Image (tube, rainbow, N blue to C red):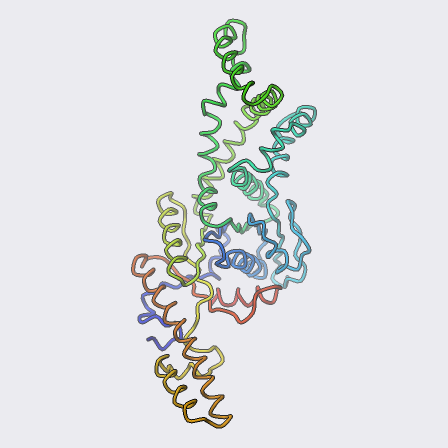
Length: 397
């Protein structure tokens, strides 16, 4: 066991992540927090954004996770598709903080309104197939996340740092795949078939595609129903025209994610499965040439209490349990009983700390060139700015 409270046998093997240098670096314009569900990713994103704002930066934090924790911890009643100012930050350094939550349908609507005429936009927005597509179609959230990130980064005169809180890791990988999947969708056979009359452009061309299209639409009409088929054709034809530009913007955003001005933070907890998933994300980011800043490991049980308590004795857990058992067997006085309870509490903490330390060591053994920030577990949940500042302090150590 180490004597520094981390539990790592050789702390020198852990490359420390300098979070304060990261958030203060004016060349970093985007920080993306990704990881499995339930690892404190939303809290980490909010704490980073607050720390950057109080260090003097103009920050907007975007959550793609529909959970309401971010709004609550930032003291906001709700978050929506419009950035809202966070009140109560320390603005002495001249920074500011806004927060928002992705509304994928509203973002989709904004794309339609921005790239079509008002009359055409009204027609599309009322289309039943569009309503389903924009609200629940697989992948729409990730497409719109790319769109929104691109929009926010383009407003660099308002914010010089965008902090993104992504969905759990599989969806985070979908976030990275969004531009390519969108391109495959728009170039797919079904889309080409549904839009072929509009693309044909003339009578001669229509004669060529007419017979095949008529047969195909007859079959789809029987399966889908005539009204639904027309709704689908109307929307797909509009998307084919409108999303050429969206696809280009999504690809530009993907390039932005690969730029040196972006930093990815993979968030995990010190458990075997969470760190294994973090390792998958690390490997994927590197394979896609995404700039990895490091890994944040939340809720690490330390071996030493921060205020200097019983665990400073570095008493092994089995020894502590044995001592507690002897005290209880002797029918102790109230003082001895209290000591036994403290020894048992210490033994449980030691057991968890050792498990966490071993999990981190296994991760470091495979990814020894990855910078890590180890954040100790807190006694209570984070639910306000003060709690976020505390997490920020832990990150910035």
